[in-house]
Length: 347
Image 1 (spheres, rainbow, N blue to C red):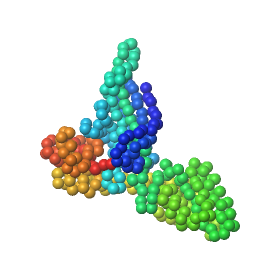
Image 2: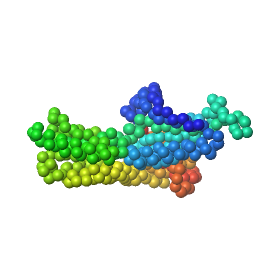
Image 3: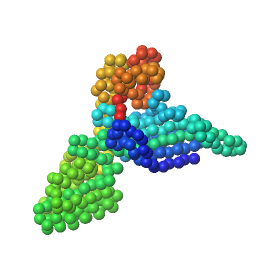
Protein backbone atom coordinates (compact mmCIF):
# COMPACT_ATOMS: atom_id res chain seq x y z
CA UNK A 1 0.00 0.00 0.00
CA UNK A 2 1.60 3.27 -1.17
CA UNK A 3 0.06 6.64 -0.28
CA UNK A 4 1.45 10.01 -1.35
CA UNK A 5 0.02 13.42 -0.51
CA UNK A 6 0.74 17.13 -0.42
CA UNK A 7 -0.44 18.85 2.73
CA UNK A 8 -0.06 22.04 4.70
CA UNK A 9 1.50 21.69 8.14
CA UNK A 10 1.24 24.12 11.04
CA UNK A 11 3.84 24.09 13.82
CA UNK A 12 4.25 26.31 16.84
CA UNK A 13 7.70 27.60 15.92
CA UNK A 14 9.12 30.10 18.41
CA UNK A 15 11.84 31.40 16.07
CA UNK A 16 10.85 31.17 12.42
CA UNK A 17 13.27 31.38 9.49
CA UNK A 18 11.94 31.98 5.98
CA UNK A 19 11.60 28.74 3.97
CA UNK A 20 13.67 26.77 6.49
CA UNK A 21 11.53 26.80 9.61
CA UNK A 22 8.13 28.42 9.21
CA UNK A 23 4.94 28.28 11.25
CA UNK A 24 3.09 26.88 8.24
CA UNK A 25 4.53 25.14 5.21
CA UNK A 26 3.64 22.86 2.34
CA UNK A 27 5.18 19.43 2.27
CA UNK A 28 5.08 16.25 0.29
CA UNK A 29 4.76 13.12 2.38
CA UNK A 30 4.41 9.43 1.71
CA UNK A 31 3.25 6.52 3.86
CA UNK A 32 3.61 2.89 2.84
CA UNK A 33 2.77 -0.52 4.28
CA UNK A 34 4.50 -3.76 3.27
CA UNK A 35 4.29 -7.47 3.93
CA UNK A 36 7.98 -7.90 4.72
CA UNK A 37 10.81 -6.03 6.36
CA UNK A 38 12.89 -6.29 3.19
CA UNK A 39 10.20 -4.63 1.06
CA UNK A 40 9.86 -1.74 3.51
CA UNK A 41 13.61 -1.14 3.75
CA UNK A 42 13.88 -1.22 -0.06
CA UNK A 43 11.06 1.35 -0.33
CA UNK A 44 12.70 3.71 2.18
CA UNK A 45 16.03 3.46 0.36
CA UNK A 46 14.38 3.94 -3.05
CA UNK A 47 12.69 7.16 -1.93
CA UNK A 48 15.99 8.45 -0.55
CA UNK A 49 17.50 7.95 -4.00
CA UNK A 50 14.51 9.75 -5.59
CA UNK A 51 15.06 12.74 -3.31
CA UNK A 52 18.81 12.74 -3.97
CA UNK A 53 18.21 12.55 -7.73
CA UNK A 54 15.82 15.51 -7.61
CA UNK A 55 18.21 17.58 -5.48
CA UNK A 56 21.20 16.94 -7.72
CA UNK A 57 19.76 16.65 -11.22
CA UNK A 58 17.01 19.26 -10.98
CA UNK A 59 17.98 21.62 -8.15
CA UNK A 60 21.68 21.38 -8.95
CA UNK A 61 22.44 20.81 -5.26
CA UNK A 62 24.91 17.99 -4.43
CA UNK A 63 23.87 15.96 -1.40
CA UNK A 64 25.35 13.34 0.89
CA UNK A 65 23.23 10.26 1.59
CA UNK A 66 23.25 8.43 4.89
CA UNK A 67 21.39 7.55 8.06
CA UNK A 68 20.83 9.56 11.20
CA UNK A 69 22.41 8.65 14.51
CA UNK A 70 19.99 7.04 17.02
CA UNK A 71 19.55 10.34 18.89
CA UNK A 72 18.76 12.22 15.66
CA UNK A 73 16.49 9.48 14.32
CA UNK A 74 12.78 10.14 13.81
CA UNK A 75 10.95 9.15 17.00
CA UNK A 76 9.63 5.62 16.63
CA UNK A 77 11.62 4.83 13.50
CA UNK A 78 14.01 1.91 13.19
CA UNK A 79 16.15 3.87 10.72
CA UNK A 80 16.06 7.40 9.34
CA UNK A 81 17.68 7.91 5.94
CA UNK A 82 18.54 11.47 4.96
CA UNK A 83 20.15 13.73 2.39
CA UNK A 84 22.32 16.63 3.56
CA UNK A 85 23.43 19.65 1.55
CA UNK A 86 26.08 22.27 2.30
CA UNK A 87 25.09 25.91 2.01
CA UNK A 88 27.41 28.74 0.97
CA UNK A 89 27.81 29.93 4.56
CA UNK A 90 29.29 26.57 5.54
CA UNK A 91 26.21 25.29 7.36
CA UNK A 92 24.49 22.00 6.57
CA UNK A 93 20.84 21.70 5.64
CA UNK A 94 18.77 18.54 5.95
CA UNK A 95 17.01 18.42 2.59
CA UNK A 96 14.85 15.32 2.93
CA UNK A 97 14.24 12.23 5.05
CA UNK A 98 12.92 8.72 4.52
CA UNK A 99 12.07 6.54 7.52
CA UNK A 100 11.94 2.78 7.93
CA UNK A 101 9.39 2.42 10.72
CA UNK A 102 9.56 -1.34 11.21
CA UNK A 103 6.35 -2.54 12.89
CA UNK A 104 6.41 0.05 15.67
CA UNK A 105 3.58 2.24 14.40
CA UNK A 106 1.65 -0.76 13.06
CA UNK A 107 1.55 -2.20 16.57
CA UNK A 108 0.69 1.17 18.13
CA UNK A 109 -2.25 1.72 15.77
CA UNK A 110 -3.14 -1.95 15.15
CA UNK A 111 -2.46 -1.86 11.40
CA UNK A 112 -2.56 -5.42 10.04
CA UNK A 113 -2.92 -7.25 6.76
CA UNK A 114 -4.23 -10.69 5.83
CA UNK A 115 -1.47 -13.08 4.70
CA UNK A 116 -1.79 -15.66 1.92
CA UNK A 117 -2.43 -18.35 4.52
CA UNK A 118 -5.22 -16.27 6.07
CA UNK A 119 -3.34 -14.96 9.13
CA UNK A 120 -3.40 -11.41 10.53
CA UNK A 121 0.08 -9.84 10.63
CA UNK A 122 1.34 -6.36 11.45
CA UNK A 123 2.54 -4.40 8.41
CA UNK A 124 6.09 -3.15 7.91
CA UNK A 125 5.87 0.60 7.32
CA UNK A 126 7.78 3.56 5.94
CA UNK A 127 7.19 7.31 5.81
CA UNK A 128 9.09 9.99 3.95
CA UNK A 129 8.87 13.64 3.03
CA UNK A 130 10.32 16.88 1.73
CA UNK A 131 8.98 20.40 2.09
CA UNK A 132 9.28 23.99 0.92
CA UNK A 133 12.58 23.93 2.83
CA UNK A 134 13.97 22.81 -0.54
CA UNK A 135 13.28 26.33 -1.82
CA UNK A 136 15.53 27.63 0.93
CA UNK A 137 18.20 25.13 -0.08
CA UNK A 138 17.97 26.27 -3.69
CA UNK A 139 18.32 29.93 -2.75
CA UNK A 140 21.23 29.47 -0.35
CA UNK A 141 23.17 26.99 -2.48
CA UNK A 142 23.34 29.04 -5.69
CA UNK A 143 22.46 32.71 -5.21
CA UNK A 144 24.92 35.60 -5.26
CA UNK A 145 24.95 39.30 -4.41
CA UNK A 146 22.93 40.07 -7.56
CA UNK A 147 20.03 37.86 -6.47
CA UNK A 148 18.70 34.43 -7.30
CA UNK A 149 20.50 31.94 -9.52
CA UNK A 150 17.95 29.39 -10.68
CA UNK A 151 18.79 26.08 -12.37
CA UNK A 152 17.14 25.98 -15.82
CA UNK A 153 15.20 22.79 -15.06
CA UNK A 154 13.29 24.55 -12.28
CA UNK A 155 13.22 28.15 -13.49
CA UNK A 156 9.62 29.25 -14.26
CA UNK A 157 11.07 31.59 -16.91
CA UNK A 158 14.16 30.14 -18.57
CA UNK A 159 14.79 32.92 -21.09
CA UNK A 160 13.88 36.60 -21.06
CA UNK A 161 14.12 38.82 -24.14
CA UNK A 162 14.85 42.50 -23.52
CA UNK A 163 14.47 44.98 -26.41
CA UNK A 164 16.93 47.87 -26.72
CA UNK A 165 15.20 50.81 -28.39
CA UNK A 166 14.66 54.56 -28.33
CA UNK A 167 11.78 55.02 -30.73
CA UNK A 168 8.44 53.28 -31.21
CA UNK A 169 9.23 52.02 -34.72
CA UNK A 170 12.39 50.34 -33.38
CA UNK A 171 10.37 48.51 -30.73
CA UNK A 172 7.91 47.40 -33.38
CA UNK A 173 10.65 45.87 -35.53
CA UNK A 174 12.35 44.26 -32.53
CA UNK A 175 9.01 42.86 -31.34
CA UNK A 176 8.51 41.07 -34.65
CA UNK A 177 11.92 39.42 -34.34
CA UNK A 178 11.26 38.60 -30.67
CA UNK A 179 8.03 36.83 -31.66
CA UNK A 180 9.97 34.69 -34.13
CA UNK A 181 12.53 33.79 -31.46
CA UNK A 182 9.85 32.97 -28.89
CA UNK A 183 8.10 30.71 -31.35
CA UNK A 184 11.18 28.56 -32.02
CA UNK A 185 12.17 28.49 -28.35
CA UNK A 186 8.71 27.40 -27.23
CA UNK A 187 8.76 24.70 -29.89
CA UNK A 188 11.74 23.32 -27.96
CA UNK A 189 9.79 23.41 -24.70
CA UNK A 190 11.69 26.43 -23.41
CA UNK A 191 9.75 28.95 -21.33
CA UNK A 192 10.40 32.49 -22.53
CA UNK A 193 9.17 36.00 -21.74
CA UNK A 194 9.39 39.16 -23.83
CA UNK A 195 9.84 42.18 -21.56
CA UNK A 196 8.51 44.94 -23.80
CA UNK A 197 7.59 47.35 -21.02
CA UNK A 198 8.16 50.95 -22.07
CA UNK A 199 8.16 52.21 -18.48
CA UNK A 200 11.63 50.89 -17.59
CA UNK A 201 15.04 51.26 -19.21
CA UNK A 202 17.05 48.20 -20.34
CA UNK A 203 19.51 48.53 -17.46
CA UNK A 204 16.69 48.32 -14.93
CA UNK A 205 15.28 45.26 -16.68
CA UNK A 206 18.68 43.57 -16.77
CA UNK A 207 19.07 44.03 -13.01
CA UNK A 208 15.51 42.91 -12.32
CA UNK A 209 15.80 39.67 -14.25
CA UNK A 210 19.20 38.97 -12.70
CA UNK A 211 17.58 39.46 -9.30
CA UNK A 212 14.88 36.95 -10.22
CA UNK A 213 17.45 34.43 -11.39
CA UNK A 214 16.35 33.90 -15.00
CA UNK A 215 19.07 31.64 -16.50
CA UNK A 216 19.41 33.30 -19.93
CA UNK A 217 18.82 36.86 -21.10
CA UNK A 218 18.63 37.86 -24.76
CA UNK A 219 19.03 41.53 -25.67
CA UNK A 220 18.07 42.78 -29.14
CA UNK A 221 18.69 46.27 -30.49
CA UNK A 222 18.47 47.97 -33.92
CA UNK A 223 22.07 47.01 -34.75
CA UNK A 224 21.30 43.36 -33.90
CA UNK A 225 18.42 43.44 -36.38
CA UNK A 226 20.77 44.71 -39.08
CA UNK A 227 23.42 42.08 -38.31
CA UNK A 228 21.08 39.17 -37.54
CA UNK A 229 22.55 38.80 -34.05
CA UNK A 230 21.51 38.81 -30.41
CA UNK A 231 23.39 39.44 -27.16
CA UNK A 232 23.19 36.43 -24.84
CA UNK A 233 23.88 36.78 -21.11
CA UNK A 234 24.22 33.90 -18.64
CA UNK A 235 22.91 34.34 -15.11
CA UNK A 236 25.25 31.78 -13.55
CA UNK A 237 28.52 33.35 -14.73
CA UNK A 238 27.25 36.81 -15.82
CA UNK A 239 29.17 36.28 -19.08
CA UNK A 240 27.89 37.82 -22.31
CA UNK A 241 28.42 36.93 -25.96
CA UNK A 242 26.94 37.88 -29.31
CA UNK A 243 25.43 35.05 -31.35
CA UNK A 244 23.95 34.85 -34.82
CA UNK A 245 20.20 34.25 -34.80
CA UNK A 246 20.46 31.33 -37.19
CA UNK A 247 19.85 28.17 -35.15
CA UNK A 248 19.21 30.24 -32.01
CA UNK A 249 16.82 27.66 -30.53
CA UNK A 250 19.49 24.94 -30.56
CA UNK A 251 22.08 27.35 -29.20
CA UNK A 252 19.87 28.40 -26.30
CA UNK A 253 18.85 24.81 -25.58
CA UNK A 254 22.51 23.78 -25.38
CA UNK A 255 23.31 26.80 -23.23
CA UNK A 256 20.57 25.92 -20.74
CA UNK A 257 21.98 22.40 -20.44
CA UNK A 258 25.45 23.84 -19.91
CA UNK A 259 24.17 26.22 -17.22
CA UNK A 260 22.40 23.38 -15.42
CA UNK A 261 25.62 21.35 -15.32
CA UNK A 262 27.73 24.35 -14.33
CA UNK A 263 25.47 25.30 -11.43
CA UNK A 264 25.74 21.77 -10.03
CA UNK A 265 29.50 21.59 -10.60
CA UNK A 266 30.06 24.94 -8.88
CA UNK A 267 28.12 23.76 -5.83
CA UNK A 268 29.98 20.44 -5.87
CA UNK A 269 33.35 22.20 -6.08
CA UNK A 270 32.34 24.38 -3.13
CA UNK A 271 31.39 21.33 -1.08
CA UNK A 272 34.63 19.56 -1.97
CA UNK A 273 36.67 22.61 -0.97
CA UNK A 274 34.78 22.77 2.31
CA UNK A 275 34.92 19.10 3.28
CA UNK A 276 37.59 18.17 5.80
CA UNK A 277 38.92 15.05 7.49
CA UNK A 278 40.24 15.46 11.05
CA UNK A 279 41.71 13.10 13.63
CA UNK A 280 42.11 15.23 16.77
CA UNK A 281 39.77 17.23 18.99
CA UNK A 282 41.71 20.45 18.44
CA UNK A 283 41.56 20.04 14.66
CA UNK A 284 37.85 19.32 14.91
CA UNK A 285 37.05 22.44 16.96
CA UNK A 286 39.08 24.68 14.68
CA UNK A 287 37.48 23.32 11.53
CA UNK A 288 33.91 23.36 12.83
CA UNK A 289 34.38 27.02 13.69
CA UNK A 290 35.26 27.73 10.05
CA UNK A 291 32.28 25.77 8.70
CA UNK A 292 31.84 22.95 6.22
CA UNK A 293 31.44 19.19 6.43
CA UNK A 294 33.88 17.58 8.87
CA UNK A 295 34.48 13.84 8.70
CA UNK A 296 35.63 12.49 12.05
CA UNK A 297 35.55 9.36 14.19
CA UNK A 298 32.85 9.01 16.86
CA UNK A 299 32.59 6.29 19.48
CA UNK A 300 28.90 5.67 18.77
CA UNK A 301 27.50 6.86 22.10
CA UNK A 302 24.76 9.44 22.59
CA UNK A 303 26.71 10.90 25.52
CA UNK A 304 29.72 11.78 23.36
CA UNK A 305 27.47 13.10 20.62
CA UNK A 306 25.73 15.42 23.09
CA UNK A 307 29.00 16.68 24.60
CA UNK A 308 30.38 17.49 21.16
CA UNK A 309 27.20 19.41 20.39
CA UNK A 310 27.35 21.32 23.68
CA UNK A 311 30.96 22.36 23.17
CA UNK A 312 30.94 23.15 19.44
CA UNK A 313 27.26 23.39 18.35
CA UNK A 314 28.09 20.76 15.73
CA UNK A 315 25.82 17.77 15.20
CA UNK A 316 26.20 14.48 13.39
CA UNK A 317 24.55 15.19 10.07
CA UNK A 318 24.66 11.59 8.92
CA UNK A 319 26.43 8.26 9.05
CA UNK A 320 27.46 7.59 5.42
CA UNK A 321 25.74 4.74 3.60
CA UNK A 322 28.52 4.17 1.10
CA UNK A 323 32.28 4.15 1.16
CA UNK A 324 34.86 2.04 2.92
CA UNK A 325 34.59 1.87 6.70
CA UNK A 326 37.77 3.12 8.29
CA UNK A 327 38.33 2.08 11.93
CA UNK A 328 39.91 4.66 14.19
CA UNK A 329 39.64 6.47 17.51
CA UNK A 330 36.91 8.88 18.58
CA UNK A 331 38.10 12.48 18.39
CA UNK A 332 36.51 13.27 21.77
CA UNK A 333 37.00 10.17 23.94
CA UNK A 334 39.73 8.26 22.15
CA UNK A 335 37.58 5.12 22.24
CA UNK A 336 37.42 2.76 19.23
CA UNK A 337 35.31 3.89 16.26
CA UNK A 338 34.06 1.79 13.35
CA UNK A 339 33.90 4.60 10.79
CA UNK A 340 33.94 8.32 10.26
CA UNK A 341 30.69 10.26 10.42
CA UNK A 342 29.86 13.70 9.06
CA UNK A 343 29.64 16.61 11.49
CA UNK A 344 28.60 20.21 10.77
CA UNK A 345 26.80 23.17 12.19
CA UNK A 346 23.33 23.12 10.70
CA UNK A 347 20.10 24.99 10.15
